[in-house]
Length: 296
Figure 1 (tube, helix red, strand yellow):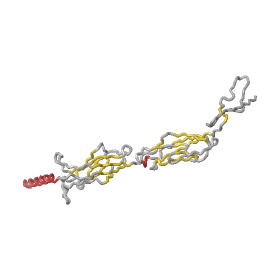
Figure 2 (cartoon, helix red, strand yellow):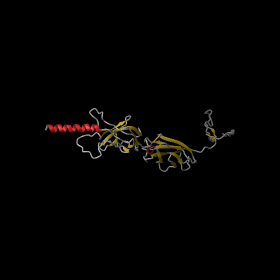
Figure 3 (cartoon, rainbow, N blue to C red):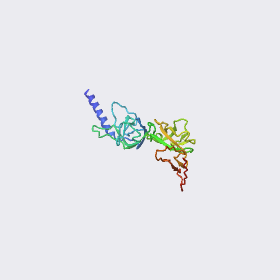
Figure 4 (cartoon, rainbow, N blue to C red):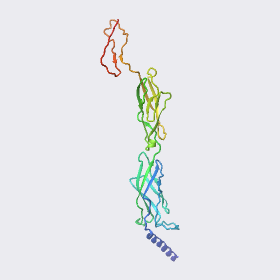
């Protein structure tokens, strides 16, 4: 029994001794990786896949007991400025690993990450001095956006005025924005008038125009509701109100007077036309000539 114990000890000692001698090579990985992760998820799709190779590995299949071999891959380590990722060894023998998020990944906060990764074999001695590591590889991760946010209008309401009888190419422009990080989900692709039966139309840039000539006598003001859609077809949670006032056509001449003025004797002096003024409608004025005929 003592002899068998000595032989077993010698065998284990010899195995460990030669194992240390055979750990000559560093693990090998690719020089660069490109990964994609969808925000709020934890799985990173890497190209090429994360695999470490050690030339110390035997060419044939290894007979494994409860022993860790030097040529196996024990760890992947990430070096970078607080990158929210971790690398995990899936299979020590094949060197396969996976990269996943270790914390929240939000595209709106950060769209991409770049860091360094290294592979470590299992050749560490009691002090860890024999742990061989691969060269440093660069990993670039792109964060894919999710259409989380709905469009929001920049103003709580919009106001404009038009002159009756005119057709406008653009009366006013409404504008919405979106908090998502990607062009697909952050850009506004369409606007729509929610109110039915209005003489107005809106284009994809938010320009509102009238589709028929408006009449001051028929209707002096309009209120229309407008919504917006991002390029992922997500609709604004709240529509915005647009108020459009119709002004009458300006007619040049004397304004603010009446043909008849009532006066009660003994009440003192009274201005005949206190609000009377000459409306020129913005046109040039070379002179004013007026004739007043008062009959009592």
